[in-house]
Length: 278
Image (cartoon, rainbow, N blue to C red; front, side, top):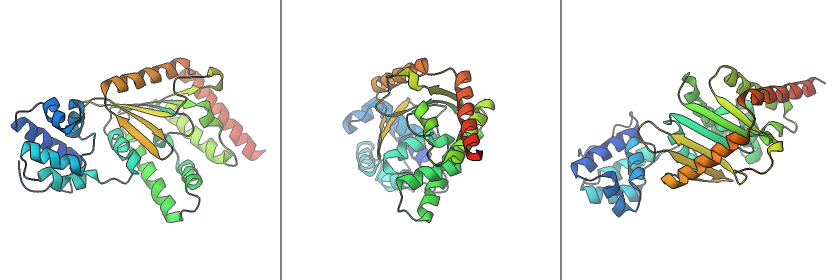
């Protein structure tokens, strides 16, 4: 294990994960064997090595001790842990950027990856009514930057289930909502995303307690992220991820077909546009 620090111009988390794999294999340990004294799963170690999870300082110190790496991971985990996102969402946002497939259920607002600038600004202004414009600008910029991953025409696969409430909550922002829904419709028609709407007529359903994001990767175990108001939790336990995957499957089974969903989205957008010009 080299004693130098990681090159800050490179991807710190990916480099740190690569170094962890080298150090673990040099020590003759499996991912599960390294995880056991750290009280984490072998899949969690795999996610650290793949760069889909952040290594925090306390964990880095323990890894240095177990693998006898001379403080390498403690010195370098700070650069890999830096994030422009809130603490409760940082790990999920950074994993999202590496995912080959993302499946998301949104019960209240349009998912961040699909938001327009005007829509994101309204969301942040509602949540931070006393924040200065500079703060809102930064939040909006960071949110829109996440959508850059959709610039690839095929990867990741993005499949969203939107509760009908997402489409109907407009208030005095009908023009903003019309633009936002047209944006989603455009991505659907470009065959870049799959969207289904869960209608009010579906009644009670499997995800009434909150939002859900499922992420799968080329070389790391799948993750599930559930979010509440100012809180969020990322799960890597296979049984938990499987349970949440079943929840998502039940949502898609009760949602409108992609074709009917597109028709509803465009119809609601047209209604908003008509109201604006009435």
